[in-house]
Length: 104
Length: 104
Image (cartoon, rainbow over all chains, first blue to last red; front, side, top):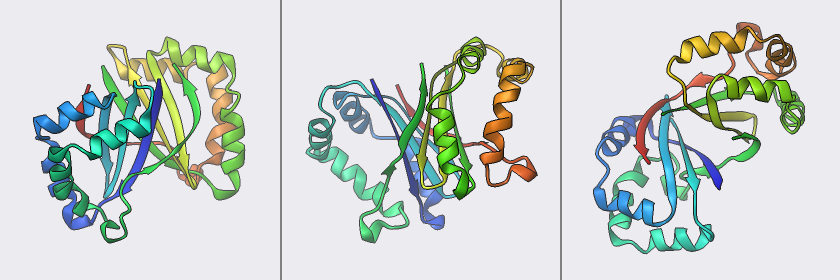
């Protein structure tokens, strides 16, 4: 099982909207997350910085991400969430962190 | 089960030392982590920013943190790790993030 930790920065004026969106994520988006083998998924915030953390339970992460990107409801959801990011125009959203310690 | 996500900033010149320390954490420190009901514990890095992420399996987090702080080996370990933080002099290490989304 591999854990992913990712960081992103929101436009300060979009923090409330990002919070609101994530207080009621569309059921179809949640279903796709599960079908793409992501589990124990949290998003946390401090100021305008967001950190997502999830465990990947599948065998082929790239294939599962391609599957996620092919879900029309998820694509529609991202039309709402992605413009909340500070570097939306440059296509910069969540960036992967490198794991330096693990204790199960 | 509650997940904690925390963020900290290292002194740029101490990033390598923090990595080195966490590539070989003392066994007694790991034992104390488990005894204090922290599980699935990772530390991840990007630049000089570190993010810790763990699940708390116990019933009384404050009591377990007091237990951790009373372990002499952990206190000794922290003498090595805490000075790596940028605001060590102000006593600022990892700060808690607020969870805004969860999907198990």
